[in-house]
Image 1 (cartoon, helix red, strand yellow):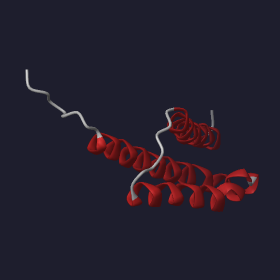
Image 2: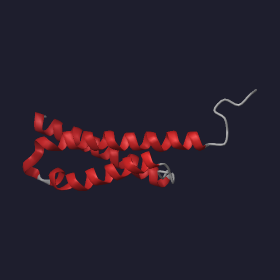
Image 3: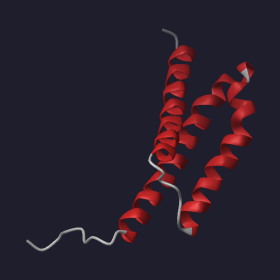
Image 4: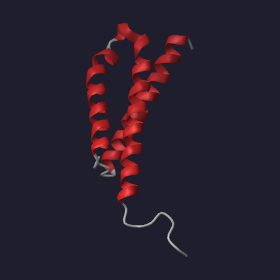
Length: 98
């Protein structure tokens, strides 16, 4: 396997991970509820929209992995914020008294 093929496989894994995570958030109805979570999700969507043409362009293979990695990091940040917000809004204490 040559380096271009390895890089493409890594890029596809990064993109698949980001898209799977976004799908799981939708399936779980884990919608952003705070301004910070909304901002992060907008950032994800804008980044994905702006980079789609570059990701799909076969002449720009060297750009795919960095774009996919950046998208994955953005999605992870949004997911973490959504989960943090859900925990903070939970009526149950983290450690109930025994």
